[in-house]
Length: 377
Length: 239
Image (cartoon, rainbow over all chains, first blue to last red; front, side, top):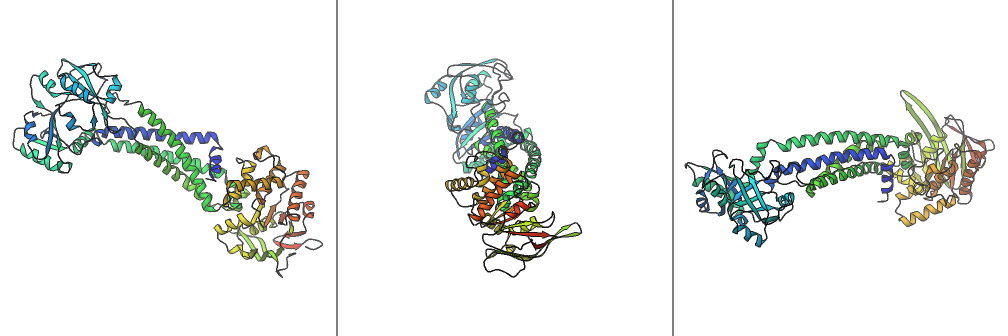
């Protein structure tokens, strides 16, 4: 602590250089914050997957539907606690830019998704309204929905207009849970398409998460050699498969991040080298009065790390503010959230880059001969 | 007592024996000091004179543990500093030696107070204790009212006084002054020499001073001449 004033004075002695270095870190860490948020947004569905939920779909293709009658047969499989048909509805709210996901589910919603919190009176109002729907808090805030509001949707494949009334708003029990979706009655959906009674997939809740794989195999065995064979997998695997269809998002983001940080390392390394070279005489003086080589090295390293953390903290703070502004994609991301863990990782990366950038100048300062150094004053 | 014949002295503070210092410049070997012997007693004020390149500063650097000799040894207050590791030498310098340079060598971004406090940061003193010691040292050089000034806000003479305060703030065993008035006008130089003289006479500090200025050297109790790395007595002897 007593050396802090020396470190701070050294950092602030060249104000423009300090601001540029902090700015470099801020830009890089802002980018990092946004990139990890985008990455998390892609994998949000995967992360939010329940370990005790299975997705049962047609083995041939997700484009092939399954008969609604499978529901009761699935419920008879040992280990299954509950099941609901699910249909991804592609209606448009006012403008195609207003994208959000809409699922038609049966009324065991709360058994399937116990992590979502719905006030009892709103839940009862939803059950009593055939055209009722449930929207997440994030979606409600986005469009200003409140219970009782009308929500007209224009069907895409089913072209008629669809009328809904917001009856309930669900909240997340954890910050990272998705609240950007809309759910409505499967019964209403099926009536409107005139009892078509085929579904995209079934969501199955198992009694024990540890037996999920076993139950999935049992469901597939139940429908083996039928006209519509099933592929059952945990929600996690199903979501991962969906995300990887988009491409290797993580790799792309990692490459971009790596290029930015390597550039940052070179820029900061050069800045620190220059800063130490300019202070050669002063380092000689510090050694003369008794500062040992290790202490000198630590002071230079800490200076570099403090600079990095100041810039990194600023960048991550700005990234956090940006993500608080909500999903910039117009609804493509179910979740757009910079988590404290990722902020911590960002700060750790900033500190590591600061240390890496400072290590050579610090080593050179440590090795500096006093006699040579004080001659350069 | 100051002796240069290597005969030794039981109450010497500094004992230098057969000291050689050579530098390598490319393939050329430059000899700076040759077979130098010196004994300096406690409380002495010794001036080293001689032409440029005669080895005065090199000798001061070796005695202060800033450089290592090629051969020979230096014993200060019973400890052979030429055998110490870099880390031990740094700790020894912090406790035992005060340095005053020609160019003052203050850290420009630190105030006079912070510059003087630097050596105390290496001690276990509390902030309050450090403040008290800095104030004492600054008062001793007559700059008690300039503690919050930066070096650029001080005159050359004042800067050198801050440098002296930094040198004495840890109450070191001896002071090494390398042309302390070399960059000052006559009046400021005299002020500095008076402070150095007072430190020797009133505070019993051992002072070793390199100078080109015969008037400055006259203030010392012993004057030694260095020429081509060999120590010689000044006219009239060394003590």
